[in-house]
Image (tube, rainbow, N blue to C red):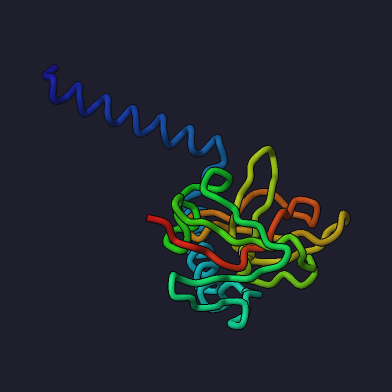
Length: 170
C-alpha cells in the first residue's frame, strides 16, 4: 500500500469518527444556520433601536480648553474594569464608558447597554429582549460582536450600570 492510499484511508477514518462524535453529541448543522440567522436578526434590531441615553445637550459645556460634562450619579467605568471585543465596533478595550447607577430597571429598553455581573464576571452588553419566568423579569443580552446570546438570565440584582455614554481612547 502506498503512502498516498494510507493518507486517504486515515482521512476517511478521521471524518467518520468526527461524524459519529457529532451524531452522538446531538450536534445538528441546522442549529448553526439557525443561530447565525437569529444572530443577524438580533444585530439588525439593535442597530435600528440603539442605546437610549440620558445625557442631555445642556449637560455639556464647550470651554476654550475642551468640554465639560456635568452629570449627577454617574460613574466612569475604565478599561481596567470592563474590556474585550464583544461590543466591537461600538466599544473596544480602550473605550471609557459612562454609566449611571440611578435608573429604573423596568424602563430599560431594547438596545440599551448595561454592565452586569454574573458568574464572577463583569460584562457590558446590549439588551436584546426582556422576559418573565417564575422568578420575575430578566434581560436577554448579547455582545454586538458575539455569535450567541448571553447564556445567563440577567435580573435586576445583576445590573450594575446603564451605559449612557462612551469616550474613545487612543
